[in-house]
Length: 626
Image (cartoon, rainbow, N blue to C red; front, side, top):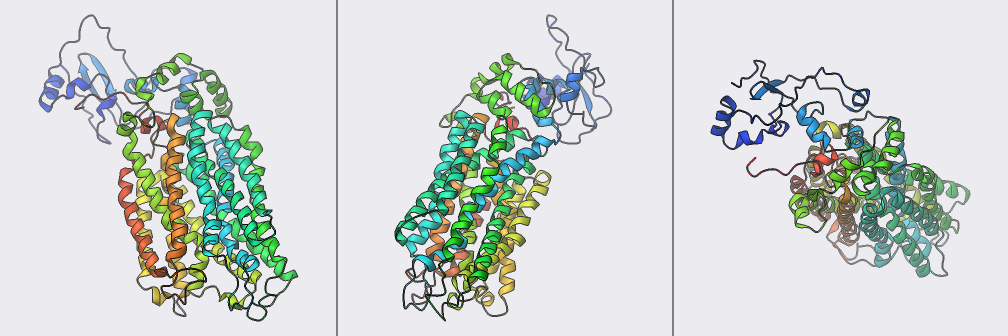
């Protein structure tokens, strides 16, 4: 008769999927008990199940790849007479259930999931991270020089205020790169699943380097032609940047082990903070250097002389420098091998993946083309993006990743791109007429660098430190909630913040919104889509999610440009219609954060699980009612 061992202890709820052939026991509570204590005799024609001992000898190869058995209390359940099956909480590849599950997964994938942090992990973080450093630098540096562009190319003689970009030109200069990014995310995301991550990775870098240089060399005999050329090259710059989003995230997720995968992907994304900071620092250095060599009076004293001809070099140098970090990492990107999961699960080349990962992991990995063929030809793992099976398995997940990223980017980019307008509104940056062109560029760069240093960069690295501890879902919900709180804290007493003596408090509150954006949904919306979708659709789905986010960035950058204008037509910027003001705009952004928090509940937690387990690629078909 079946008996239970006396040392019953449950560290966590029992997972019946880890019990081989145990599903038939759980049709109902009554039948389960009957079968537990009065089990049917096993058919005599079946061989006896192999005995299992956690102390059995193992080959040197298995000792290399099998993680150590976790020291948790277990119990033994006798399902059949005289046959003991140990049950371990979680999945241990040395238990029979673990061996059955892991047998379906290639050895190289098991090795990657269980690998300790090694040098190649840090190399991948640096190589992919420098791409994101460049992305952030190129996307956000334009906001540092738009005021300068207005003074240089749209000066109006006799005007009491310095020249500024007309509304349609300002919207195009600020937003055209986002249009290109959206297109690039969709195109290169799809291409990354078709041609491979590595091949497409090189293409995006070449586009970014070329267009960064071309943007700074924009030519023309009139202001219109210069702006048109600038917008043309910034669109294609954004196109290349767009490809970096799905590819960097996918490559890092497929290289990382499951224990620290979130931190590695977050570290790549955290380079965006350094890119924003670097843009401000470069603008500070260049504008200060030229200002010291070519002093000029303020606009109020001499409207024409306040903008020296050499000021035209400032914005061009700032844009051109964006090509350097991308160019420096091109060689290392091309030296990276294709990810094991793409080579195995999409390209289906067991020999190549064994060769590549043996070099990366510095261990011998055997190739098993037969096992790979069985895994990849399983009909359950061959559905397409527009299939009913994808809709059933991942439709809600894709809805969650797209909506949360869309709502987050409305709030994030509207604030980031137009910090200079907010700083001017609260009086932190002096009136434009009291400064010359280079002085204004210097103060705008200084203000944005301070916000990046105190709010943006720390938020990213808090995510790196805690994402594999408290999980993606907790960080995302906390971030949306705190962003809502601080935006309401800015909007409700807005009149108080804009009065003299209270500007520092406004800046602190404003900085906290960036901190919780980056220690929150700005990081997690990038990380999660790279983890929860199947390998053959991972880059595509991440590209769709990211493109929806950039649609939100376009709404934020174009919409906030008009909405934030003063309701009084006389106080609105030249050429702009009256808006709802900064205060009411902050209320709208707080509402976006509340919606983002609600849609976060559609996204699953992926902490500590393998990519194949999260995406369902390694799962068996479940029987109804189990």
